[in-house]
Length: 116
Image (cartoon, rainbow, N blue to C red; front, side, top):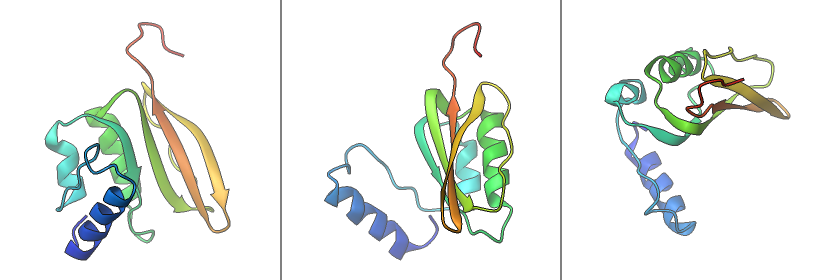
């Protein structure tokens, strides 16, 4: 997140849910952070709808393979926009529609030799 007020709100919500010790909030450019080499279990994506940042972020996540085995990506987007398939070991799992918005869930396979 780039805005300090948004970072503060996310931190407050983590505290309310008693998850502050299980999460980290990074302030700065998200696209640059994807190159950090850090691995994640869960990634939430909700960039501005008018931009192409969502597709760029999904491509970078797959290219840099930043999810741990069995990791999950949740991407919020307009319901009328289909999201791209990602290269293995990532696969699109399911899309949930809520009026004008949708959440698409991707899953990363494990480290099995013969993944589906």
